[in-house]
Image 1 (cartoon, rainbow, N blue to C red):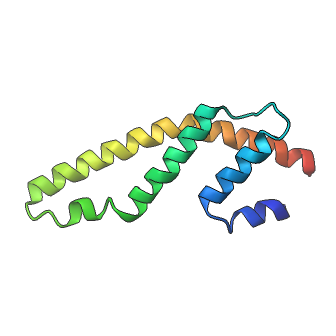
Image 2 (image 1 turned 45 degrees about the vertical axis):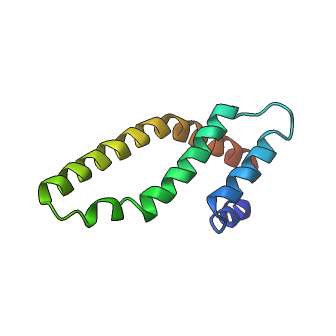
Length: 103
């Protein structure tokens, strides 16, 4: 539990690096290189969604154009969510397996 609490205070880049190091420690990683690539892409895209997407549509003066841009951003976010969901489930299952081992 203490380790999980410590993770909450670290940024995602640090957590991903530590996860990959631990995962590869025994030579038989649970997550694939593609999984780690997707996680890094999610980290990068998260920065866009948190810090930039609002600015990409809020200043559009024409309400029709603003609505079109918002609809496009909404579809884009939904697509990214769907791509990440499978990996999210895989990670969640693994975290619970590890957590139960130490409980």
